[in-house]
Image (cartoon, rainbow, N blue to C red):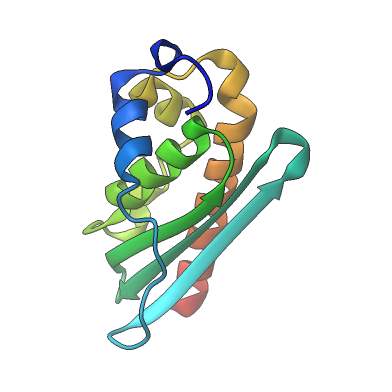
Length: 129
């Protein structure tokens, strides 16, 4: 991290250090949906991939470019989606992510990119049905 680590919540520091779910899904074992959002003016790009069986997310991973908050938010969202029904993922939004990560208001634009990628993923999962 280039900024003073005191500027980040413990959860952001932990997720950014580990980046759980930063990967691509291997082929096979169910349909794969993906959703992506980019806002270069905000310094953020996020892509989620989820394996969906029926209406159930069995796995979710991400790839992202951006600040530690963007990467930590992507990791948190991917972990939250695993094991859930697609419908139960819809309430996750940038405001909730900001609360969970204790992100400052100036990061909301980047968290909205994470939300947009999630929404695109959920639309793609709905299209599978």
